Length: 518
Image (tube, rainbow, N blue to C red):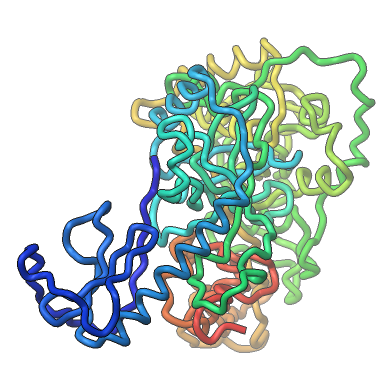
């Protein structure tokens, strides 16, 4: 897994063709032939070529101008000295054992590109998406990567065996904050490790005034990811369903108090609390509001998955926590702090965390798990079990043995061709509150957002159309300048937040390292 990386100083698009046979290599008249760190600078038929014989026979770069050749030579040697200085700083760790190496490689053989890994980093739960495309982002680790060290020994350092690449874009499940995880990940000392970015002023303190490439200023250090074999194939069933931790309910758990889980919060202060947000999101047709302020929903059309029936009056519906708050509490949520409990009680980003269901069905369910209560609509059992597992997996909640057995029983009803991955996370955002343009006449704008008010005969159309969620489809390398990145970022941020994770430090300035950045 050792990496080789070479640099060139470009003097133009066209390079002269040179004859590199031995008999045509002549003595350099203007300067002695240079050789350092394996690089060689010499004249070939009147051109000045830089070679790295240990890497390839052909020259890496040739120049007609001697000064340009010397400039490129100095650039390469400065960069190599920069690397050599970093190598001196590398820390030493024990070699992976054969068993640790096998666990690591078995994991990489078992994963699918673009997969999601759920893990804890510094005690916080993250959902990490495999970065399997886009611009490669590298960092200098302060150690030779354990896999390189195991496979090739310390000489791997001379081949950039300490370089690590951005492998997962992680999102904190509680507050949505981002975390960049570099890899490859590896297993050592009974836990999994990755690399996080670290603050190191090596490049600032480097003595020479050289041109530093972007990746040369990014550094990383190892970070513990989990205390168990969280990523081994044994953590998943053959169908790809995560194996939840099975634990009996302890008698030492603090008593459940529903008031600890503050719910129906209006996070964005638009007068629509969590209940109204769910009703708006899940209605199969545009909702009708009780007043022109659009704070409360008067009617709509909802499919009640528990009963398999349609409902048109919000008073017939409850907003159900698919994992009841009390069940979550005894499954591990009692460890949450105040903010985490409120976030769990009002979670809007996962579409099935909160669902609109028949009031009578929800009250029949109460706080019971699937071993004690199942929806009367058996066609929903598969999705219900998938969602139950997915939410508990994301929030690191446990199950009891009867609960787990009941979930597996429900999964047996899944139709062919509906795997667990189809139930995986599809992040949502709060819908933008509609703009009330005019309550006395009908607007003929081309916008597609309509706001209807109960007990009136007029329809108003908002003046702004919400763009479609682009998803995590961009990297900073996809933009030529900061202004381009900023324009794209501003287009979607109001509606979906930093959906492509372009703003690393949360200051609303994406891709600051691009030309023209702040």
